[in-house]
Structures are given as structure tokens and as C-alpha cells.
Length: 164
Image (cartoon, rainbow, N blue to C red):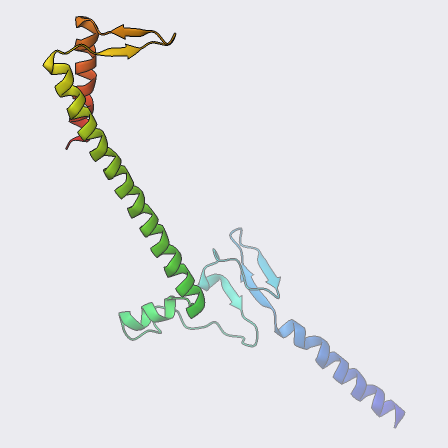
């Protein structure tokens, strides 16, 4: 009797030790060597190079043959996304679009304001009245003809760029 229990115990121990081996992945890497692991092979390994999968001694059918239509192929290829995460992602995208639109509106408003001021200043320059500026020392200087022409050119460039 003790001998029988030792044999049964040995058989059970051997069977239990072989179960983890059955849950192993077996594949051929890029250099042609056979690899064994309890984790799936890296994403770059082709399906034809996967020699064994856990709980099955055979390879799965190619993915291209499984779907009956293009719509089911897309459904199989698309990862399942949690609704909460999807809603958060959509909300973040909408906020980003709204922020970009607000920034564009702000720039457009600033250009319109610059256009109005530049046109007004250009009219003042063209009228020929005396225009004084304060220099770096805080002294008041009157524009001469050369400075007036340079100021008119600069103002016309601003009108051309901001008044479209």
C-alpha cells in the first residue's frame, strides 16, 4: 500500500509540474532561434513564426480568413474602449478645439483693432500735420520729411497685413 501511494503521488506531482509547461508560448525570433516564454511574443513576430500557444498545440486561423466582411474586420481590429475614457477623450478634444477657436478669434480681433488704428494714423500722416514723438531721453521731437516717409511706409505695411 505505501508503495502504491508513492507511485500515485509521483504521477500527480509529475502531472502538476507539466501543466505550467503547457501554458508556454513558443515562437521563432528574427534570428531563427526558438524562444519559450509564459508571455506572448513581441508584436513584431509574424503569426507563422508562433509555433505554440498556451492551451493549444495548434496555431489559430489567420485573421484575414476569419471575418466575413470588411465591417466585421474593422470590428475585430478595433480595440474595445471604455465609455468613460472615450467620453473624457472626446471632451478633451472639444476643449482643445474650443481653445484654438478662441485664440483665433482673439488674433482676428487684435488685427481688426490694429487695422483701425493704422488707417487712422496713416490718414494723420498723409494730411501733413505736425507729428511729435517722445525720444528715449523723454524729449519731444517733430518728425521731419524723411522720418515721416519712413513712418508712412511702416504704417502702410501694417495696413496691408492687418486689413485683409
